[in-house]
Amino acid sequence: MNSFSDLGLAAPILRALSEERYEQPTPIQSQTVPYALAHRDVIGIAQTGTGKTAAFALPILHRLANQPRTPERKSPRVLVLSPTRELSSQILDSFRTYGRHLKTSVTLAIGGVPMGRQVRALIGGVDILVATPGRLLDLVQGNALRLDRIEILVLDEADRMLDMGFIRDIRKIVAKLPKQRQTLFFSATMAPEVEALARDMLNDPARVAVTPAATTAERIAQRVMHVERAGKPTLLAEILRGEPIDRALVFTRTKHGADKVVRQLGKSGLAAEAIHGNKSQNQRERALAAFRDGRVRTLVATDIAARGIDVEGVTHVINYDLPNIPESYVHRIGRTARAGAEGVAISFCDAEERAYLRAIERLIGLAIPATGGPAGGERLAQATAQRPKGQPRAGRHSAAARGQNGARSGGKHKARQDRAPQDRAPQDRPSRDRARQDRGRKNSYNGTIASVGFLQS
Image (cartoon, rainbow, N blue to C red; front, side):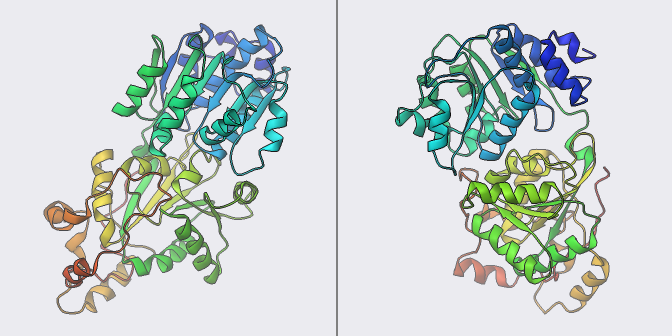
């Protein structure tokens, strides 16, 4: 399909798309919309940044425009479930943008804000409800919401729903829905657990699988920097000062870690904001707004809080802590190089994170190049010359050497993939016995290791 008009969408929707200067549908949109307009269930496999929100929003708005009726009390006609508050808010904005010339009511039900306003918004019924699973169940249990009149269900980012431990909530919600409904199911990956959920939820679904026009590896210059844990704050500050950064998204594994990084950057004279589950919704929205409009160019986030963040102009993603779930690496670095742009992904890796790095490289099928930081070559030479006796040379744990030494550094530090949500801290420090074993092997690179080049973007 060469234009949105070829999809057969209602004129008010086409007008809104034209006002937004959207001319051609993306592959996920051109393939999904016809199935959805034909009332088929759909499984859509697509990464973020491919336009999947419009892929379900446009046919839903078209159906509501062609079949207008007053929603029943406390009942939505359409339910959209997403894993995070931020993503839910962005989905709501998309419905409002594409449906601005329709008389369609849309409301949001997310945690972190008082429930009273949401209860009042639902009293008279609503066309479209966008919600996170936890708050949705709170409203159902409080008798503020009924789910037996749902005509269309959308489950967005199903893989992340499972990662975050929402599988029981999802099944509780689905059990309350009418069996005669349309279901649109979207996921970036289709692990066996996701496939099983889809089988239970969908009826004879059309399957749409779309990959980005260019792979992540082609558009993102990825590199890893091996560094002792204590050297991470200095290295981060040096990168933020030395790299040509428009906006940088920095990931930590824990909420406490995100706040700590912000404080450390502040001491170095670098402004940053944190966004995580312990922040109020207003705090999160203010931090995201400051990042989006450029008042703050560094946003520090946990995986869960950052899920769904779609900010133009993120040039760098920095993994201050490597994720203990390999798939999270792909989601993290996907925050840059959006809409055809290029980006940079830099990962810090300390001695206790090497197993995480190997798991990530197995998943993406790529050995991530290692590199020194700004002026890394000179500092590396100094670090090697000053190396105390008994410590390895700088190349010992480089990307080129990992294959020979992988078994040595794996062992007890096998990456754990069963820990969700990721705001929960894994074991970041070794036991005393492990520390004694590692003492003679730790590298002392003062923040960098040997450069083996950059991935060509």
